[in-house]
Image (cartoon, rainbow, N blue to C red):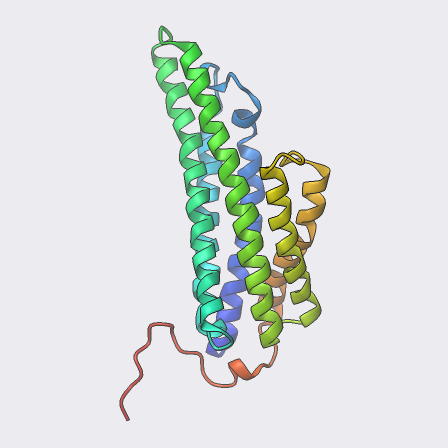
Length: 241
């Protein structure tokens, strides 16, 4: 297996990990996100911790996709490729903030369970605020930034380079802005984050990411001028003649 094929394989696996880990990770948070009294109740702390662990895996895989692809994509446009890396890092930082907010609720619940004489009313207010922080980080990270970076920037790079079939790259270029605009609509209260309109706007982006992961694992990169020469590491130092 040559280096370019290995790069495509690793990137594809990382894309699939982001999908496989993100869905159950979000579902595991359900008891905390849907129960306003979670912080004073019996709780499901182990389940929340597992969800947090899966989201940490998502953060690592998110950054990994951009870092692994950067040596190839920089040949098409170094500035856009660098923007993609930056967007994935920023997205992962926001996800991490959301993880911390929910784990903080778990800590407050455990402290209340150890000392039930505490002020339950204050805990409910603080818990509600921390859950709200998680909601906003989810909107700004996997919503706005993912649409901009993984959809528009990566879609454009893949379209121009021809590394994947261009019709599917167009799906990313269309789906990314749709997710971004949907996030802005939610931000200004046009509709709820979990709604039919939001789901419809997100669908092309989901199809694009799933296709990209499967295609890179199964097929690798299509022949392209930017892969004609051996791929160097981004930080490699040219050897003197």
